[in-house]
Image (cartoon, rainbow, N blue to C red; front, top):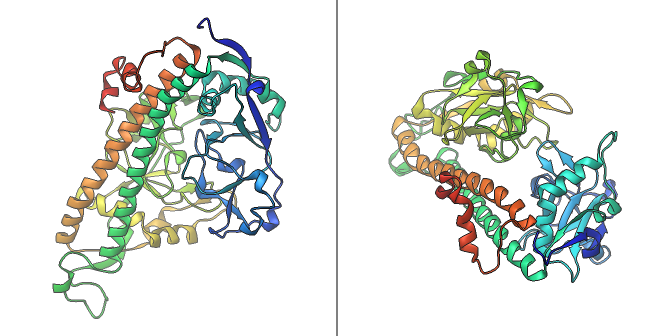
Length: 441
């Protein structure tokens, strides 16, 4: 620890606001109202805006005390620790207007601490370990405001706090920018799909006749998905075969699917068993996979698909996830078709169960797919394939950035790395020296 750092109690450097008990009977689904941030809206370092409820904007002044501000750090006080890690987030400049709901702590620094630095205190491994230690033996895990405030750590001077925060924020800004680019690519692909294969305004459509009987362009057809794909189910890996300690063997599970399509691996489960049985479920890079279960109340994940990354790691098919087997030249089109609004509606209408939505293979097989001509599929593969490669490159960059940031964060927060006189650009390259693959970011 540096000489000018001090042992500091977190509560001495912040004001803590607990959320309000908004009554659920007055919740709305009106996207023009004000979002309510509840415990279910917090993930590891992110706000999960897609699963939000709303409150009438007419009450904005009445509950102005609970309106969240840019930079606010949020921490779940009920079940704060999930398998993916600590449930916390911060409010960004362009985030939607939102109210703070009870049992969420909003942390705002005072003159002793930089607000951006506070975010990284909460994001640190030491704080996570502290919170996790408080939950031992508790039936319904929860933490109190006083427990949050009692956390002790080594605090540098304000100038050093700001320098550390600026270095780590540079990583977060790069990650955020890449995520925005990925979202744009996905939205553009979906719009193009709707234009080509729903409204039939594909390149050269003006010169193509419409079949009167089918209502489709000449040379196109509509068939059951079972005629073009086959689903191969995953394996029921046992709990003892999983670990949270990162390695190169990853199980593709329900939690690896993103809302809107594609895969994510920030909350992965890693395999430690080397039995031969799992080799039968070893996925190849660019295999197409589909999730057949969903625990979200809104059914946002059911039937989602994604491509296995090309990143040198090993991926294995877990239960309730299936590999979509089809011709190589049909994969790109199948991915888009299974991300379409019509397929999502099909999945939600057929999924059963109250707490966990489940699809059967036949629910997928019965879906009617519009099959374009080979020429149009070839053109789609050429255009969409480029978009998929860009998305995969950005996702790989983000993986390297996260790994580099997570190595750097504890070193900066403990004073192991001296930041005085160093530029942010120098710090961005510092961890890259330890692993050559980080240079790809």
